[in-house]
Length: 167
Ligand SMILES: [Zn+2]
Image (cartoon, rainbow, N blue to C red; front, side):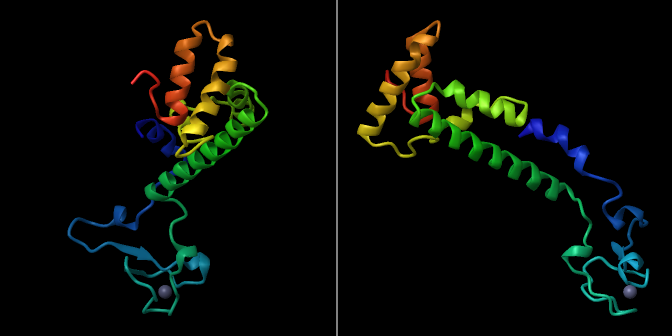
């Protein structure tokens, strides 16, 4: 997950928490947002209804960004990328094109290449013996394009189905 942290500064705008503004020992407070119809008073951070003006704090008035929100967005983006990649790996198999065909479609869409680890269970989740044999044949048919066909085939088999053909 480390690589995601580099991206977080893009999402995180400071100051996020009103807690940043208070003296040590004071309880964290938030501002009743005058820009959204509130009165501008500072109220305890857990307040749902302002006791000065009756303003209701809802999810829409919460800070638009938070470290957790940014992380969730990064994770959601990755899930979308994996789903996209899986779809095209299945399409590659269906059209009998090599897995790299899906890699290139992914690259055109996201301007980066997918991770090898994302291949797992793309085409045959919980593959049966028959499906394993089919996928082995599919890989074998395309392995000639590699400088080291046997290595390529066994690596792809492991990445996609999680099985090691030599074990
Ligand atoms: Zn208020």
